[in-house]
Amino acid sequence: MPIVPKLIEKLQRHPKRIVFPEGGDPRILQAARQWVTRRMGAPILLGDRAAIKAAAAKLDINLQGMRIIEPERSEEFEALATQLEQIRRIKGLRSTEAREALKNTSYYATMMLVTGQADALISGATASPASGLRPIFQIVPRFEHVQTASSLIVLDFDEKKVGSDGALFLADCGVIPDPTAEQLCDIAISTAMIARHLTGETPRVAMLSYASKSASNHPALVKVRQATELARAKARAAFLELEIDGELQVDAALDAVVADAKGVTSSVAGKANVLVFPDLNSGNIAFKLVHHLAGANAYGQILTGLTKPAAEISRGASAHDVFGAAAIVGCQAIDRRLLFGSA
Image 1 (cartoon, rainbow, N blue to C red):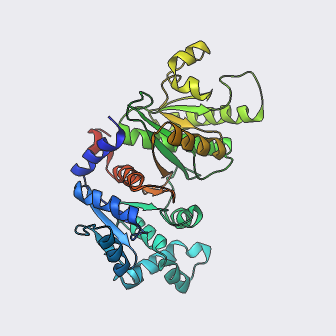
Image 2: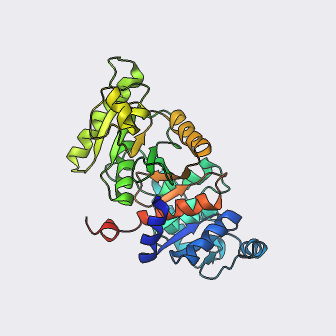
Image 3: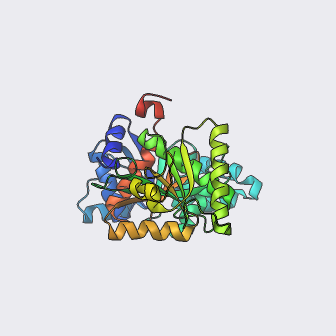
């Protein structure tokens, strides 16, 4: 069973509020309608009320069950502006600048998220990645053990038996161009924890490279080896339940027969459900290639390492992609004890 239907069932038991800063976009409206129809919680649409209503009417979408907020006319505007100024005071943000920033729906949505007025955030439908990510990375705190925020893509196969019942977690596919060993360590741990939260399974993390357990000391391979050891040590110190191995080629990570033929034996080889790429080039190219040629569903970018759930989707995303990403970040906002009955 694909992962999204499972997450829908969990959200129907534990509904969440998802804020969309691009509330008038047709794909957002279609995804929000699904959210309401399936009783998964309350979508919050930001933008001009008249424009949102006109867009919904054109698509024959019923807005009942959705909340529409025009930031500058909101009763919360001044309070949120004050809180934004306090958060960014160390960077020299002044009151007038905070108020101006908050007129931007991406900033307003992020402030709703950090102040608990929304449970999760989906942005990027119309904004460039830089403008969509900027307020999130400026305002949302990172987890204490994470130095670098990054992102992941969930690839979901309807039939293919890979990963966690057809789901694979790929990182980093959207944020850090050339991560250091330390950053790859953070990426591996953060991605593994989200995979565990969403699936209930032990993460099996493959640190990918162009070779498997090579004798070469090429810098690209050394970086992946160092990242693997750093991640293992960090997981042990934090008592995290995960398996990690590297460096591995992607076929050895996913196919047990190939792993055996290459003499790679571990709890991860042939059974990986988390794939950590050595750089952004390989990660971004790989997920888009699989998405378009193999027909896998691709949901993300899901941001990792942050204390609040958020996603920065592609401007090329469909309503289906938006809805799937919303289901993922919505379930991130559910206490894991409620998801699987254990801590």
